[in-house]
Length: 390
Image (cartoon, rainbow, N blue to C red):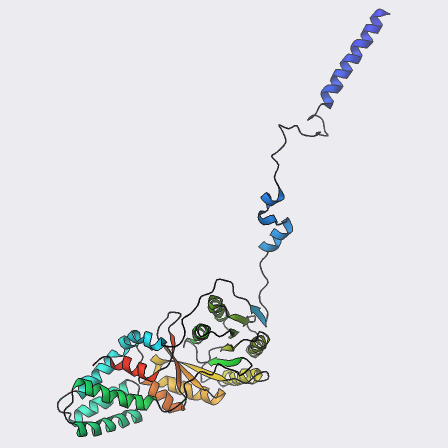
């Protein structure tokens, strides 16, 4: 009996020992609660997601933004630049213009300062003017006036020659046309429409013009109505973001007239001072595309009149640029000319020729690839740069 009791006690002790071993923390299928040594270091949600963001916030932030739709406004991100004002820009860029035009001015001054001017000399002077894209009729008029003055004055020094030539060039360029850029809509946004053929620097001109106006303290909306070239809208958006101008754009292939309409609507809603509408470049020989340009203008005018139609011309194209200008002027009633690339191989006389051809003033000139190389045209500063110092 005692043996049986002892066996039972030993068995119970063994069962309890096995049970204790199986049920101790960290063992068994339940895993139990971890001990202090096994527990991972605690971390707050702020440390895991900086700024207190939740997991859903992070996913939302990483999710790419949907592409813009027609009429969407692209809001620029800070910081923005403060461009210089328009006043005095051409004077500041005079050296750049002088470098590209010095041959023209120097040739004329050297010819006119000769002690005796023969008929051949006068023919050479006229040829020099024509080569500089002045045009045949204006060149003949300048030579006739200079010959009269030389007969009256007789012997001339270089300073007198320069003064005479400057007066004649100023007379041909400054014909009394108003060069003011109409950017005051009188209680509504002024609407500027920019047109031209491919490759003249139209979109870049829109961006630079936006900088000019922002530098003068105006608020600007840019309308990316060149919907045939996706890069044009991206380029315009970059220009706008630099200076704090909103950009209205649409999907590639969107009707350009609808984007122009939405841009003007945004300008009215935001009480902007000026809306600049970029249009797709088009060959002046393509009748359908020229008709479309007229449609864009008509659609804009359902909300507000178009204050300026600026034709961008590549000054290096010379007389070919005049043929382009005629067709655009017929299609959309051009009010002003923007001459780009005057810092290159362009001849300064194109200013005289294009104004005479269209009866429209040159209002802006582009003198380089820098963001602030677009300047309001000033006759005296332009002629001084062409002629250089006596």
